[in-house]
Length: 238
Image (cartoon, rainbow, N blue to C red):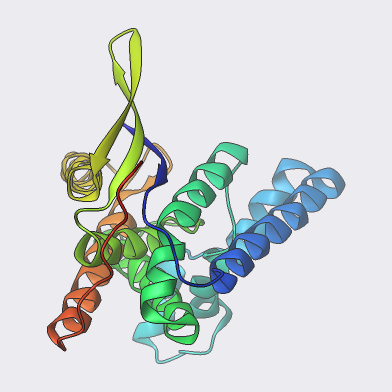
């Protein structure tokens, strides 16, 4: 099930969401430049320096080096991606769901929420796989936090999704509760299955970063909703 768009209009332009998307494309262009000039080994070194490496992050945190390059790598890793499919898939999800969460939270709060979600996601991966030397890169954790918030704030919003049925596919409008709930269950299943492997970064995917980010976004959105502000009502499709 691949979401394509939602029927949930915003009241203002999603400025922060657009800036985050642009930042990820700029960072990816930088990666392509490194690849062109230094090859794959240079790009791997780039990821090691600017990604979140669990073993290095854990060591730095335990020694109290909170402003070290290893810890700062958690922040920079949010804007890096391992390939075109990784980048475009993440940006699609950020565009579909980020604009409404930004509209609901407001621009400054959404930016803070997004970065906190990404940091919490990376720390979850570090906690699960503290000895891993594989760099964790990608906006997936921050976007997962955005998905968790969207689920709480707009559970009845209709999401136009591409649903595969064997060799066939169909475009269906599905409630956000089902789309995002199904996505999270898949992350849990794959994440639990990966615990028996040598690394919890199964197939190059930091599954527990997704899980941690989603839960953090869910909790923050529940706290916001508990303050008594009602979420926006999703529009119906004509």
